[in-house]
Image (cartoon, rainbow, N blue to C red):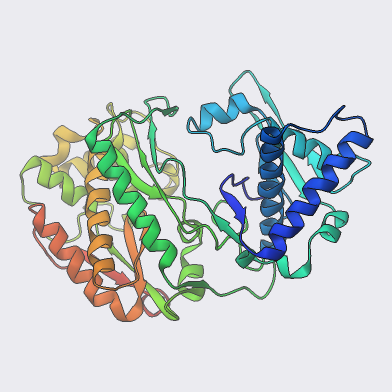
Length: 426
């Protein structure tokens, strides 16, 4: 089981936890001097940095303890941190390295630390820290709670990735600032929503996410990720804990205002959007129902997406492609069948249009969330869908249909689908 990633925005909220951090910081400073790790006490500015590092580290270890994780992943290399996060949160300074080292010192023994590594400048493993029993003698039981902590707003809520996937600076434009304001506003609304997650009977208290990490129900804010070095490509929202939960877990255990939830999403959205770009009417019926491949709908869906996102003619199967079709199926046969089904989209296959369509999708869904929130409907983003209380499913469906009409689309049967526990299990 993977551990959660170190969250630099965590802070103490409750008075018992704040008091424990002050006492622990003083204790660690004394131990540094006694062990010869330092020759003199820190200057005031350095002491504040060290205390902040102790606070953030302890908060991360408390979260790991509560959600059932054995370790926390953290990068010790400030150069690595700068590459991954140019906006570098305040805690990433020498004080953090000092705090990690003294807490993990064999004669202090509050924390275990397996130091990570990098090789060839392209790979490696982060450092992993884990609490030791001695740590909890410094923390009162009432502070071992997710409610004892808070998260500061992200220093930057937009992420721009280049053609090589590396993070790039956000351009200083009015457009970027407008995107930023929308995400900041969304995060403020998400933090105010009545979101609850029911615990599981065994294993990590809140279950495991699709990424193999324990689910952390304090992660309720998002960032907006753009691709290909452009602010009009991509644009999906990532970061909230429910996005990483297995689908059935969301239906079983996620609650909004105490109510079970439904997933409201667009059906076959990317080919529908592609037809709008092509200024052509899509064929009637299921756009993924291709003659000769009727029993391979998920495979057709995967391949259609690959054709729209690829920036060159598709010459190799995408991941999972061969397994989605009968053994011996040729790539060219599948591409040919899809092209025959959608001749109006063939000029856009291999053009990278998918990233542009994803941006349109993200703009639509941001607008849908804003409408629902204005109406008092608690709604959560889910990559390409929204999650709402079961009783608000019909209204969310209406809002999404109107949003599609506003960009020139035609509402048809199956455009918006509402799925909850009954639909999935029935």
